[in-house]
Length: 228
Ligand code: DC
Image 1 (cartoon, rainbow, N blue to C red):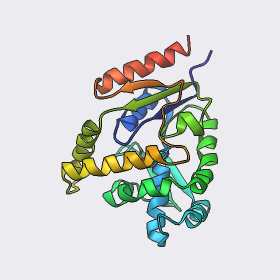
Image 2 (cartoon, helix red, strand yellow):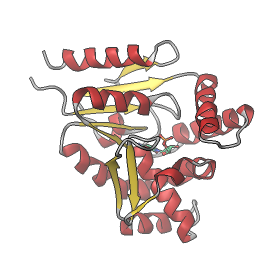
Image 3 (cartoon, protein in one colour):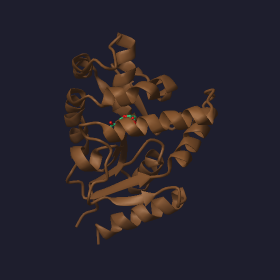
């Protein structure tokens, strides 16, 4: 048996999915694909083009026209990848609070999700991919041979996001970050289509109990178990 060609990692905002996905991809020589960046890129473009986050048809049309590329970065920035929208590198704009505030509303629209679905499947079909998101194990890649679900309490996640924002020089306060995170959790988990959910065959990793090294060791053990 070969090692799993795709690994799905789902979980709520700031649970540590990206950190784990990035390190796991590096350890296996795989590509890390962050599907949240796709939704963020559409949210950014909608803002630029004056498309309302509630305008489902407008968002789906916009997403169909956009050329969104997610490429490995050269390692100089804060992210393991860079996001190009119609050739322009917008990575730094995607993690601003204005995008955080809109992205859950944008990503709840079924028709927009439908447009982005084939894109994610095409990337997975190339193999050698660790894909992170909310619905990767449940909807995008239900047959993924290894699925992880990374979770942590809201207070832990808000603390991490707050530190991240401060490091990036964004003026934030913890109570607002926590309230915003809980609002986003409600939207991501409560939406009708592809809500955040644990796939029945996913392995749950409680990231507030483990260090990143321990999480990586656990994930690599699971990879080896599927590649005896
Ligand atoms: O992982 P993130 O915080 O960058 O994701 C941004 C938003 O995108 C999140 O609020 C929900 C949405 N999302 C989604 O609906 N499905 C995915 N597979 C990934 C992200």
